[in-house]
Length: 314
Image (cartoon, rainbow, N blue to C red; front, side):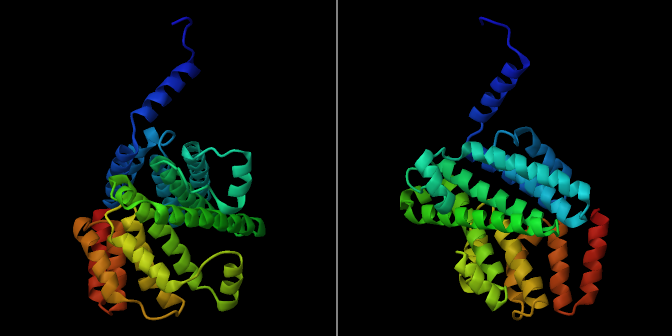
């Protein structure tokens, strides 16, 4: 070496080594392990497994910030919300590094239409998907600010996230059949199902006047299409299958009941929950939804049992 390496040089070399040694498939596998830790109530272990690579991997960054966001949503503690927001901003920065760097003309076009869908690598496609998901989470957290500025910022973030998801859907539609069978692409398709399905389902529950305005702005609020996308995502063997499942459970067991949009589909909810309840019998989320199903069925004795089981698990 012609000179002594500085601390910045060492950090750069370490960063390059970590990134080069972590391919997309490995990142997905490691995040799947962290997800299983999370579903087994090992929240601290899940964060610890993701933390070392969160600045070098889009999936580690997204997973780490997602767990912090869930924590903030459950506690509503301002400190937790600040930590989650800082992590989401860092995750957006990490995802951005993996996205295609467009030229000047492409940048102007992508402002309105998103990234061009042609000639993107598999990694760049996943970067678009992760960026949209983190952007949606950041927008949702911004809404909790409960101010006019927070509402405007959240709305703009949601719109940008939806446009990127639509772009990802176009990518999926033009992807050749052979490429769709790749192990990593299954996770991309599952993410598109989850994002497009969630947007359509949530928007479909808005009042008709508001929905017409949202559709005028480019959003889509087709409930049946949203449900079909989420069902496809839940049935897939992808990293985001559980997210599609949880969204469907929230719709059947809470939103449709509270908002009066129709009767919750208890048989489907039970079928969706059963494999996860068997795999993670003491998982807080599984006990929560199992108890909710018991409440809706009027089986309050079972609710007491599930609550006691949850307390013992803690």
